[in-house]
Length: 169
Image (tube, rainbow, N blue to C red; front, side, top):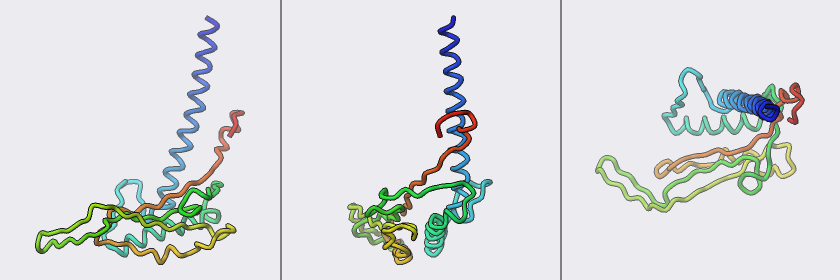
């Protein structure tokens, strides 16, 4: 009976700890959607972009919000370096077909199925290797053969709520 009681207590403590981690992650995800996605609205989870200039606006908005993170966020977040292209903190990439021509008027297309990936790295200006600065503004998308655009970065944070419960953050 004692063993069952000890195992049950351990399971309950583990569940409570895990719940705090899940809550922390969900709250951060909601915050990041509002912070990094331009014109994000909770009532509609879909984000629509209709023009080429809208794509650039949304891209640059996300990168600028990322670069301004220490001055804008309430929580304390740290950049993670050496995870992106050429040791950068953020990677902006586009994938597109090597050769592609689509003519809807004639119902024809000619696409080379080989995929090319172009990436540039962006670092916050406070880093010693910040030579990549604002070069992301010169990143030109190849819309006529574009597959997708990705912005990847990592952030570090400490969940201070765990300290209240005498756990290691």
